[in-house]
Length: 469
Image 1 (cartoon, rainbow, N blue to C red):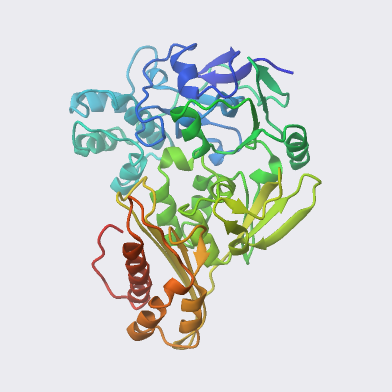
Image 2: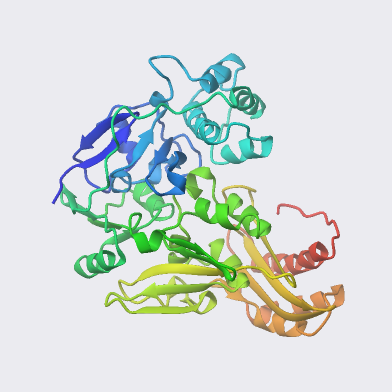
């Protein structure tokens, strides 16, 4: 049993004894004294706490921006992190920092360290980013003082000139032992068998994948976790397989890795992934974690259901079961997952020539926001008529759900405005949206109908004016 967590920070080895549920932000600002990293929202939204995280075999093994405020110490065992203090080399600012200082890219400066770290991560991995890629890298960094134009210009000026300093010491490997300190324990299994054993032995442990959802409660509400099981190193959950039929992603595959594989073949899905998670969130959050939370407003499930995805999960006795993802969700926050079971993988079919897919998200803010309604639509055409169709929605019921009555109304018919209107009138047969601060039930019903209409316009190559999509 180990009492210390080992990792590399700013090129130097660190071995520290802390509770494994300590946030990385508290660890680096407290015992490690790296106070350049700031706390803003404590929810993974504002980016003031951004660090670069490099983990062997994850996200291509390169350093990606991540939110220290919702990440736990157990998750960085064996990893490398770079804080804003590590961007300078021998006391000399890197060229991005110099460019930001020269053209007034910050005012109060509170958000500046996180912005500098996030852009350094971008430029270290992409020597010639376009403006869209720069904005995408900044989507998880909020600056309230100034416009982003001088920040973007600083990134352009430093492009092609940024490299991360190599670690002076060899990075540590993640511990396979149980980490225990001050009454809290963490297990980091490396195989599915070890993971299931840990679930049996620690039935009340928090199962932690990316932690981008659970970490908010840990940081914002100071909720302690006496036991944690980290899934990042489970080889079966980290596998990605691709063949002619589709992709199979292990449950611990990050959304950034999913995006890298499906973004070209499913561009609409790629846009959704970029919107519901900034670089910081995508580099940590996992496809299995997004499903496992069973949120009625999670953005991944509606798209996956419309695509015809299947989920595989395992019981603690090792038995595995595969089913359509749409059948996995039972009721609010309730699923088919057995007690102390684990999600193993998700299979996404590849689109065929006669199949079409779109997903649309409506939210109050374009990036980094909770959906009011998420609509995902897949159809298979036979000539001018719809041979098969799947209409899936999030935010319209207690679970992500298909609108089967509307689907039935469309099958065998052409995709016309009249048929879309008739199908929209049937959404209430399957969907029961609630009224909350994001929108009323009536508003949600109208939006859902409008999104099906937008799908028709998209497939017909028609341009439509859409607000807040």
